[in-house]
Each structure stands twice: as C-alpha cells, then as structure tokens.
Image (cartoon, rainbow, N blue to C red; front, side):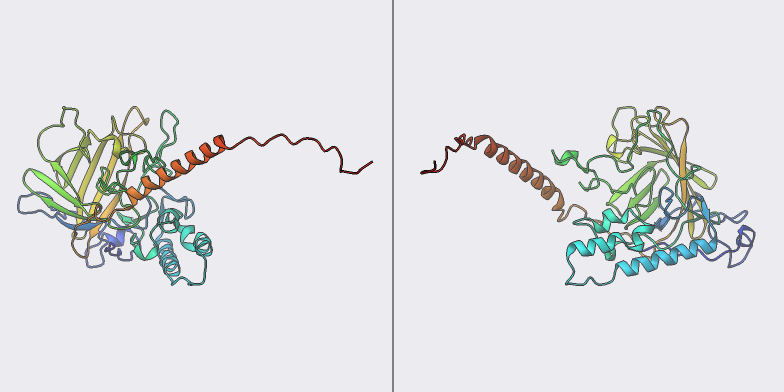
Length: 372
C-alpha cells in the first residue's frame, strides 16, 4: 500500500509554471506533451489517487473550496499526528468500551469522522491497516478541500427531494447474500475505485495500472482486482445488458482521453442515479508525474444539470498485486448466520410467551385462622 508522493512547495501559479526543476507538476507547462509509440497521449504505468482530500467538503475542516499552502501543510501535519496517536499500543487492562470511547473522542475523528465506521466499529480495521494518503490533493496549483467541484463541495439536491447515500443500500439487509453490498460480496470495490467515476475510497488500496493499445485502454484497479476496459471504437451497446463498470467508449482529443460511459448497473448507482446515468471522464497527462482526471455525471431525471469533480493521479511507488478479496471472506456467511440466529431466538421467545400457562386467579384473603 503506497501513498502518492507529496507535491513540491509553491508560492503561487506564476512561480510554479516557470521553467526549471521547481515547477509544480500539477500545472501543465505551455507546449509540454508526452506521447507513446502509437502517438497517443501517454497515460500508461502505475498510478495512485490516494489523498486526504475527501469526496465531499467536510465542514469539520473548512467551508472554503481551497486551502493555502500553509493551511494544507498544517492540516497534513495534524492528520499525521492524529494517526500516530490513534496507532499507539492499547492498554491491555482497558476494557473494549473504554478503548472505543477514547477513539470516539480522538483528534483523528474530528478530522475524519468517517473513520469511526472503518476503525471503531466491531470488526472494523484499526489505524495500522489504514493508508488513506498523507497529502491534500493539489490540482493545477490549488489545494482542494473536496474532490467534487460543485460550489459547496456537495452533490446537488435530487429533483425528487430524496436523500441518497453514496454507498447505496445493503448494510441493513439480511435476507440474502444477494441483497448485501457489492463491495462486501467482493464483486466490486466498496469505494468506487473502478468507477465510473473513479474515486479514491479514503482508506487504502487506491492504486491503478493503465495499459494502452491501438483499440482499447485497460485500467487495472487494485480494489478489488477489477480491470476496466475502455473501447476506442464503436458505439454503446443497445442489448439492454449493463456490465459492471458500465459500457465505456473512449476517444482521444489532443492530449486527452475522453471516455463516455452508459448502461451502468443498479448495483453501482451513484447518489441514487443509475438507469439514465451518463458519466464523462477526461484523462490528461499534465506532467511526467501527474495525470489530471475530471469527471461529469448527468441524469436529467435526477438532477437539474450535470456536475462533477477533479483530482490528479500521482506515480505509485511499486506495482499492483492481486487483491484476493474472496479468500477467507467469512464475514458474509457470519452476517447472515447471525441474522438467522436472531430470528430463531425471537421466534422461540414468542412461542414460549404464547405457550406459558395463565396464572390462576388469587382468591381474596378471608383472614387468618383464629382471627375474630
């Protein structure tokens, strides 16, 4: 698990764009390009989108769309210290309740409250297993506070007024393995790493391997062993089949790979949209060490207008190995078995209550023997 390397300190776009070794890799220098042997924009190699920047803007941190260099470095330092504090050895004499209470009041959860589910829940990971990245995402010389580029850093309201979850349903469904989440079932990653849109999950394994051929682009995603195939010719399928990761068709526009995806399955809904969801993505190599990634989602039945987000890929220090999610995944049968046991206990308790004899009526006292 490798985090993306930090961006070099800058004092502004003008200095970062200047020629020389101090140039900010997130800002494309005029006239710069990088092509492969086929003449395509070179996107190949191992990449990571690990970042401390969340998908949506956290009011626990700021309500501003971007941070200054000093603010970004300060937040990174605070997060690193909070991780180290939460990763200290646990006192073996402390109770589970005491440990969880301490974690619930930690500085880490003030910065990333979502870690409560990942690290504080029963059966969750502790901090030693979490590798979310160590830096605020820098895009075009700006330190972003959310991957979403909407004005408030949040998804826009739906036309029907319904509240929607990023992860969708499944967590509180216990009838069958088929109603559990697709990440839990090891079908797709739980954080939408493979996409589209392709997003950092905020916890670990945010790594990719991009391979280009004359007629396709393949993107191998570490979480969970998915390979997304983007065709460079033909139209979208019309047979009604909705493959995992949808039906992606791409083409090159100058130095950018443009990808349009439709036919996204319901299991990969995005904030409640799937049936008429269209995702457009732009991959642009802006420097030897960065790929700029933008996406736009549109669904006229769900939102008033298209919206989206942006971040940069940085080089991965290593390669992508197999993520064998299915091996030893005993959580799924344990969850269903636990639900069946609860149902059995409830049925037995109800049956016992029904079968219990009705207490006989107690006759009123007539006084003690010998009483006058």
